[in-house]
Image (cartoon, rainbow, N blue to C red; front, side):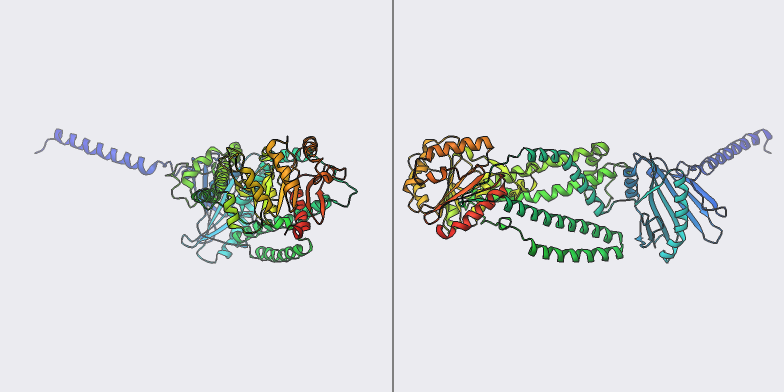
Length: 619
């Protein structure tokens, strides 16, 4: 028989184990978990006949910078199966709320035609989860709320949208009483990003480049361009008219681009009626553009397409490869800039910034680019433009170097273009001379230049190339020729005989008339043109120097040629200081063209007028 003393300890052990098991069960199932922590009071309730079922904190977005704790409430309606869920979070501003909306996303298909909140809400139906979601952003003075309503919906999403609409309107009215009066669409789309990028770049241009452009315009000198001589042609009105016509065409094209962006936004938003209306507007605008080009056609200098001459050696191939790399990387740099601009706006709301955390995102290059964008977020986004400019500057330098090393030599130019050539004679100090580039800018640098400066020789050569290749002699010791005329290098013993040969066979000799001083080599070239050139086909150009420099340099040239019978007619008072181009032939003698400004417009139009007047004699 078992004694009572031996039973009691066993009972005590069993009782202790039972108490411990009950404590574990109570601790596991009785205490609320961190993910099921109750939320605070909801900012709104759907009605007295709706019963609050659950209230919880959404910890999945708890680390989103700039946003508070997300909370969720679910109500049971009076009817069978009626449920409504509110998901709500307060952020510092729109960027953080939009970034969080992008991070969460709304699965399913968009439901269009829902305009309870003036079409600013984003409504999607997910057939797999049998749920309809309406999401929007509402903004107060110092905070922004991301709001989301969810309703069970097995089918007929439009009917469900009609059911959820009154709740969304009532909820927004309640929030408006607390100061959340402005409603915005959550998330980004392609047109938003492009528009944001364009506006950002334009703003930076107005802030950084605009003042310099305004100062440069105000300081741009004006020249006297009046003359009573019939041999002088003032092109000021011609240039002004051509430029205003171009401005009108550019304004129309800008408006067409704006309509295209709005059309893209309507297509993305699924607004069929707006998309069709904008498409009709674009069709009318295309017809207007076609009519515009008949009524105010471009000036001929705007359509200049000179022959593209390049070196035929391996050096030319390397130069072409470098320029190709630069042009190929340019769109990559611009796309990366757009993505950085996009991600910088979303950085406040996305809760992670590591490549691993972003690996599942649908956005391109989100993993490697997002940490960079986050560094530029907020007030630091202004540094995106300088970084972009530095990257583009490197591509510009690469393209510029490639263009220079692939420049055609004289032999290449004459082999590729069999038309009679122009020989360009100048003082070497004018090789780096620049002028305002308002008409066209060649190359990658020309397309992206902020200061609109082009080399004078490039403008001269581009316009002359319409009627023949342009060749020149390189200065002694030059290793890489600048972009412009095809160049040849000769020794000191042989350069004169080659210049004399090229001058005699040229369509015309182009002589620069604004040297700092007339040195021995340039004096010999002047004498060659004046006394030994049998055909007398000559063009004289004055560089775009300041007024005081123009007067001094022109006086230097006239002092050297005024006593020579061939040049003496242009030393008279009929030539004002606004002259840019003079031309001569045996039949017509001397004529001059000029204007009150010196830009690539004025030189291009002057050279165009001179060559049209004299080409019959020069041919």
